Image (tube, rainbow, N blue to C red; front, side, top):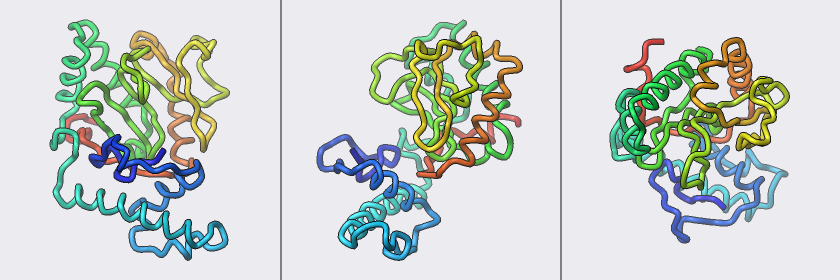
Length: 241
């Protein structure tokens, strides 16, 4: 199911904003809606791949996404409460929304800052940093690939099952986190990594296993790019890298 106006640009889950696409056309729509294809003719890009009628349909869908993105950029705003947050403000929002105590809030802050330090530069500068679901959780994405989320809400879950999701190569998950089947794992379609549910204590005890997370970040950087998200957290003004 495809959102005609994406949710990160203010699109709703209403039926008039939804259209049914196969997985291939869904990926193509987001891929060709990126800024680098803003003024390119899709009939040339997709020649011999799709029928003209389907190319025309994808052209219209990509145009709507591009227009929604341009509107937000022109207005210099983010749709989540129309403001940009510092990392400290984002942490405070998450603390309030999830009714965290002082100890849990301190763990949250330590983990977020540790993850930011561990994402390799310049990959960090390519990421989006977003406070989502009215301040319930923070996500760090590289293009459309989720590197980190806290708390670990699923896309449709009411309550988080873990403190956070962290990304690792599928065949090199830290031994201390196995078996992964009990950790609310989900897989990526375009590269061999998985998101794994962890507690804050487990994250802070990764030690040498942080290298596996760093490797996963590099794999995400090399993976197929499907879309970019707009940040609503000002990382580089509030975090000293």
